[in-house]
Image (cartoon, rainbow, N blue to C red; front, side, top):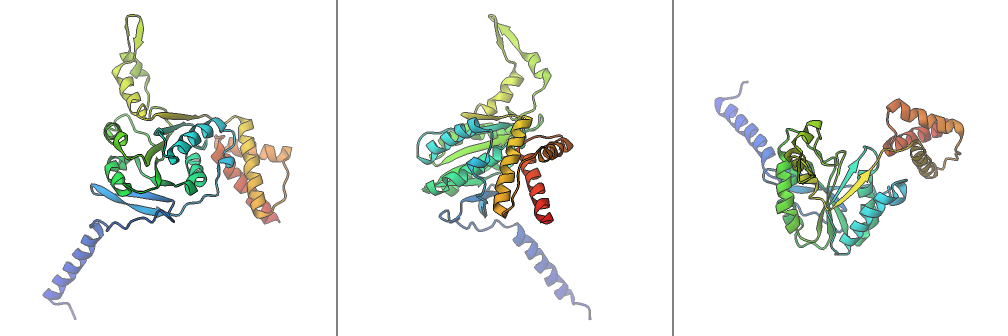
Length: 295
Protein backbone atom coordinates (compact mmCIF):
# COMPACT_ATOMS: atom_id res chain seq x y z
CA UNK A 1 0.00 0.00 0.00
CA UNK A 2 1.57 3.32 -1.08
CA UNK A 3 2.02 6.14 1.42
CA UNK A 4 -0.48 8.94 1.42
CA UNK A 5 0.66 12.46 0.42
CA UNK A 6 0.69 13.54 4.07
CA UNK A 7 2.83 10.50 5.01
CA UNK A 8 5.25 11.27 2.18
CA UNK A 9 5.44 14.87 3.36
CA UNK A 10 6.18 13.81 6.95
CA UNK A 11 8.91 11.43 5.73
CA UNK A 12 10.59 14.30 3.87
CA UNK A 13 10.30 16.54 6.94
CA UNK A 14 11.84 13.81 9.12
CA UNK A 15 14.72 13.30 6.66
CA UNK A 16 15.33 17.05 6.51
CA UNK A 17 15.44 17.33 10.31
CA UNK A 18 17.90 14.45 10.50
CA UNK A 19 20.24 16.19 8.07
CA UNK A 20 19.79 19.53 9.83
CA UNK A 21 20.70 18.05 13.21
CA UNK A 22 23.97 16.78 11.75
CA UNK A 23 25.12 20.30 10.86
CA UNK A 24 24.07 21.93 14.12
CA UNK A 25 26.98 22.98 16.38
CA UNK A 26 27.82 20.37 18.97
CA UNK A 27 27.15 21.16 22.57
CA UNK A 28 30.55 21.79 24.10
CA UNK A 29 31.41 19.22 26.76
CA UNK A 30 34.18 20.44 29.09
CA UNK A 31 37.33 18.33 28.97
CA UNK A 32 38.33 16.88 32.33
CA UNK A 33 41.99 17.85 32.20
CA UNK A 34 42.65 16.03 35.45
CA UNK A 35 42.53 12.74 33.55
CA UNK A 36 42.84 13.90 29.91
CA UNK A 37 46.37 14.79 28.82
CA UNK A 38 45.66 15.82 25.23
CA UNK A 39 42.81 16.99 23.04
CA UNK A 40 42.27 18.02 19.44
CA UNK A 41 40.61 21.26 18.37
CA UNK A 42 37.64 20.48 16.12
CA UNK A 43 36.72 23.57 14.12
CA UNK A 44 33.03 24.29 13.77
CA UNK A 45 31.76 27.52 12.26
CA UNK A 46 33.50 30.49 13.82
CA UNK A 47 34.61 28.44 16.80
CA UNK A 48 34.94 24.80 17.70
CA UNK A 49 35.32 22.31 20.53
CA UNK A 50 37.97 20.11 22.11
CA UNK A 51 37.86 16.36 21.48
CA UNK A 52 39.77 14.33 24.11
CA UNK A 53 42.54 12.11 22.78
CA UNK A 54 43.95 8.86 24.08
CA UNK A 55 47.70 9.38 24.06
CA UNK A 56 50.57 6.90 24.06
CA UNK A 57 53.26 8.04 26.48
CA UNK A 58 55.65 5.14 25.86
CA UNK A 59 58.01 7.30 23.79
CA UNK A 60 60.27 9.16 26.18
CA UNK A 61 63.13 11.62 25.86
CA UNK A 62 65.67 8.78 26.03
CA UNK A 63 64.13 7.26 22.88
CA UNK A 64 65.25 10.27 20.85
CA UNK A 65 68.81 9.36 19.95
CA UNK A 66 71.36 11.75 18.47
CA UNK A 67 69.32 14.95 18.87
CA UNK A 68 70.67 16.03 22.25
CA UNK A 69 70.98 19.71 21.34
CA UNK A 70 67.39 19.84 20.10
CA UNK A 71 66.14 18.08 23.23
CA UNK A 72 68.04 20.47 25.46
CA UNK A 73 66.67 23.56 23.75
CA UNK A 74 63.01 22.56 23.72
CA UNK A 75 63.05 20.85 27.12
CA UNK A 76 64.57 23.97 28.69
CA UNK A 77 61.87 26.14 27.13
CA UNK A 78 59.13 23.72 28.22
CA UNK A 79 60.50 23.49 31.76
CA UNK A 80 60.37 27.28 32.04
CA UNK A 81 56.80 27.22 30.75
CA UNK A 82 55.44 24.60 33.16
CA UNK A 83 57.12 26.42 36.04
CA UNK A 84 55.18 29.56 35.16
CA UNK A 85 58.26 31.39 33.88
CA UNK A 86 58.60 33.31 30.59
CA UNK A 87 59.02 31.03 27.56
CA UNK A 88 58.83 31.29 23.78
CA UNK A 89 56.64 29.91 21.04
CA UNK A 90 58.79 27.34 19.22
CA UNK A 91 59.24 26.32 15.58
CA UNK A 92 60.79 22.89 15.03
CA UNK A 93 61.95 22.73 11.41
CA UNK A 94 64.07 20.43 9.29
CA UNK A 95 64.26 17.07 7.58
CA UNK A 96 61.23 14.79 7.80
CA UNK A 97 61.25 11.83 10.16
CA UNK A 98 63.99 13.24 12.38
CA UNK A 99 61.98 13.44 15.60
CA UNK A 100 60.26 16.82 15.60
CA UNK A 101 56.76 15.60 16.48
CA UNK A 102 58.12 12.80 18.65
CA UNK A 103 60.01 15.35 20.75
CA UNK A 104 56.86 17.32 21.50
CA UNK A 105 55.00 14.15 22.52
CA UNK A 106 57.95 12.96 24.61
CA UNK A 107 57.82 16.28 26.46
CA UNK A 108 54.18 15.59 27.29
CA UNK A 109 55.22 12.27 28.83
CA UNK A 110 57.94 14.05 30.81
CA UNK A 111 55.86 16.99 32.07
CA UNK A 112 52.31 15.69 32.28
CA UNK A 113 52.64 15.23 36.04
CA UNK A 114 53.86 18.83 36.27
CA UNK A 115 50.66 20.12 34.66
CA UNK A 116 51.53 20.16 30.95
CA UNK A 117 48.66 19.42 28.57
CA UNK A 118 48.65 19.22 24.77
CA UNK A 119 46.11 20.61 22.28
CA UNK A 120 46.57 19.54 18.65
CA UNK A 121 45.32 21.93 15.99
CA UNK A 122 45.41 22.03 12.18
CA UNK A 123 47.10 25.00 10.51
CA UNK A 124 43.80 26.05 8.92
CA UNK A 125 42.21 26.26 12.37
CA UNK A 126 44.82 28.55 13.93
CA UNK A 127 42.55 31.46 13.01
CA UNK A 128 40.32 30.16 15.81
CA UNK A 129 43.00 30.86 18.39
CA UNK A 130 40.78 33.28 20.34
CA UNK A 131 38.22 30.47 20.76
CA UNK A 132 40.94 28.09 21.97
CA UNK A 133 42.04 30.70 24.49
CA UNK A 134 38.47 31.05 25.71
CA UNK A 135 38.21 27.28 26.17
CA UNK A 136 41.23 27.10 28.51
CA UNK A 137 41.06 30.51 30.14
CA UNK A 138 41.56 30.42 33.88
CA UNK A 139 42.50 26.74 34.02
CA UNK A 140 45.48 25.75 36.18
CA UNK A 141 47.22 23.56 33.57
CA UNK A 142 49.94 24.62 31.16
CA UNK A 143 48.80 24.12 27.56
CA UNK A 144 51.03 23.58 24.54
CA UNK A 145 49.12 24.25 21.34
CA UNK A 146 50.71 21.85 18.85
CA UNK A 147 50.48 22.38 15.08
CA UNK A 148 52.18 19.57 13.17
CA UNK A 149 53.50 20.06 9.62
CA UNK A 150 52.89 23.80 9.43
CA UNK A 151 53.68 24.98 5.89
CA UNK A 152 52.11 27.03 3.14
CA UNK A 153 52.29 27.11 -0.64
CA UNK A 154 53.37 30.19 -2.54
CA UNK A 155 49.81 31.09 -3.53
CA UNK A 156 48.35 30.36 -0.09
CA UNK A 157 47.27 33.61 1.53
CA UNK A 158 46.40 31.84 4.80
CA UNK A 159 49.89 32.54 6.14
CA UNK A 160 49.09 36.25 6.19
CA UNK A 161 46.06 35.52 8.32
CA UNK A 162 48.17 33.40 10.66
CA UNK A 163 50.81 36.13 10.90
CA UNK A 164 48.12 38.57 11.97
CA UNK A 165 46.73 36.10 14.49
CA UNK A 166 50.15 35.45 16.01
CA UNK A 167 50.90 39.15 16.25
CA UNK A 168 47.52 40.14 17.58
CA UNK A 169 46.59 37.15 19.69
CA UNK A 170 49.43 34.94 20.91
CA UNK A 171 51.28 37.80 22.55
CA UNK A 172 48.18 38.68 24.55
CA UNK A 173 47.18 35.12 25.41
CA UNK A 174 47.27 33.97 29.02
CA UNK A 175 50.52 32.68 30.47
CA UNK A 176 49.23 29.10 30.35
CA UNK A 177 49.33 28.79 26.53
CA UNK A 178 52.30 28.32 24.20
CA UNK A 179 52.47 27.44 20.49
CA UNK A 180 54.78 24.68 19.22
CA UNK A 181 54.81 24.01 15.47
CA UNK A 182 56.77 21.64 13.25
CA UNK A 183 57.65 22.19 9.61
CA UNK A 184 59.95 20.87 6.90
CA UNK A 185 60.55 24.49 5.87
CA UNK A 186 62.55 26.96 7.91
CA UNK A 187 60.44 29.92 6.79
CA UNK A 188 57.20 27.93 6.34
CA UNK A 189 56.93 29.00 2.69
CA UNK A 190 58.69 27.74 -0.48
CA UNK A 191 61.77 29.81 -1.27
CA UNK A 192 62.44 30.61 -4.93
CA UNK A 193 65.62 31.80 -6.61
CA UNK A 194 63.65 34.69 -8.06
CA UNK A 195 63.01 36.00 -4.52
CA UNK A 196 66.61 37.28 -4.45
CA UNK A 197 66.09 39.49 -7.49
CA UNK A 198 64.48 42.11 -5.30
CA UNK A 199 67.56 42.53 -3.12
CA UNK A 200 69.45 45.80 -3.39
CA UNK A 201 72.53 47.56 -2.02
CA UNK A 202 72.05 50.54 0.29
CA UNK A 203 75.20 52.29 1.53
CA UNK A 204 77.21 49.16 0.89
CA UNK A 205 74.78 46.88 2.77
CA UNK A 206 72.69 44.17 1.16
CA UNK A 207 68.97 44.55 1.89
CA UNK A 208 66.61 41.64 1.16
CA UNK A 209 63.74 42.23 -1.23
CA UNK A 210 60.11 42.41 -0.19
CA UNK A 211 59.49 38.78 -1.19
CA UNK A 212 62.13 37.49 1.25
CA UNK A 213 61.04 39.87 3.99
CA UNK A 214 57.47 38.64 3.61
CA UNK A 215 58.50 35.00 3.82
CA UNK A 216 60.63 35.31 6.94
CA UNK A 217 58.09 37.51 8.70
CA UNK A 218 55.92 34.60 9.80
CA UNK A 219 58.70 32.39 11.15
CA UNK A 220 60.07 35.40 13.03
CA UNK A 221 56.95 35.25 15.20
CA UNK A 222 58.46 32.17 16.86
CA UNK A 223 60.98 33.10 19.54
CA UNK A 224 62.69 29.71 19.51
CA UNK A 225 63.88 27.89 16.38
CA UNK A 226 64.98 24.27 16.78
CA UNK A 227 66.60 22.77 13.67
CA UNK A 228 66.74 19.08 12.72
CA UNK A 229 69.12 17.70 10.09
CA UNK A 230 69.28 14.55 7.93
CA UNK A 231 70.82 11.53 9.63
CA UNK A 232 74.26 10.24 8.84
CA UNK A 233 74.49 6.47 8.34
CA UNK A 234 75.99 6.01 11.81
CA UNK A 235 73.25 8.10 13.40
CA UNK A 236 70.64 6.02 11.61
CA UNK A 237 72.25 2.77 12.79
CA UNK A 238 72.43 4.06 16.37
CA UNK A 239 68.68 4.69 16.28
CA UNK A 240 68.07 1.23 14.80
CA UNK A 241 70.07 -0.35 17.65
CA UNK A 242 68.12 1.64 20.23
CA UNK A 243 64.70 0.61 18.93
CA UNK A 244 65.75 -3.01 18.49
CA UNK A 245 66.79 -3.03 22.13
CA UNK A 246 63.54 -1.41 23.27
CA UNK A 247 61.27 -3.70 21.24
CA UNK A 248 63.25 -6.84 22.04
CA UNK A 249 63.06 -6.09 25.77
CA UNK A 250 59.35 -5.38 25.49
CA UNK A 251 58.71 -8.80 23.91
CA UNK A 252 61.34 -10.82 25.76
CA UNK A 253 63.40 -11.41 22.61
CA UNK A 254 67.11 -12.20 22.77
CA UNK A 255 69.13 -10.53 20.03
CA UNK A 256 72.63 -9.28 19.21
CA UNK A 257 74.03 -6.82 16.73
CA UNK A 258 75.93 -8.28 13.78
CA UNK A 259 77.35 -7.29 10.41
CA UNK A 260 74.47 -9.09 8.71
CA UNK A 261 71.89 -7.16 10.74
CA UNK A 262 73.67 -3.89 10.03
CA UNK A 263 73.67 -4.63 6.29
CA UNK A 264 69.96 -5.48 6.42
CA UNK A 265 69.21 -2.16 8.16
CA UNK A 266 71.23 -0.24 5.55
CA UNK A 267 69.45 -1.99 2.70
CA UNK A 268 66.09 -1.21 4.31
CA UNK A 269 66.91 2.52 4.30
CA UNK A 270 68.37 2.41 0.78
CA UNK A 271 65.21 0.79 -0.58
CA UNK A 272 63.20 3.72 0.76
CA UNK A 273 65.66 6.39 -0.28
CA UNK A 274 65.43 7.73 3.23
CA UNK A 275 67.61 7.50 6.32
CA UNK A 276 65.94 8.94 9.40
CA UNK A 277 64.47 8.05 12.78
CA UNK A 278 61.11 7.02 11.38
CA UNK A 279 62.77 4.64 8.93
CA UNK A 280 64.91 3.19 11.73
CA UNK A 281 61.86 2.58 13.92
CA UNK A 282 59.98 0.92 11.06
CA UNK A 283 62.91 -1.40 10.36
CA UNK A 284 63.16 -2.32 14.05
CA UNK A 285 59.46 -3.18 14.15
CA UNK A 286 59.70 -5.28 10.99
CA UNK A 287 62.80 -7.17 12.12
CA UNK A 288 61.46 -7.77 15.63
CA UNK A 289 58.13 -9.04 14.31
CA UNK A 290 59.83 -11.47 11.93
CA UNK A 291 62.19 -12.69 14.64
CA UNK A 292 59.28 -13.36 17.00
CA UNK A 293 57.39 -15.28 14.31
CA UNK A 294 60.42 -17.49 13.68
CA UNK A 295 60.40 -18.18 17.37
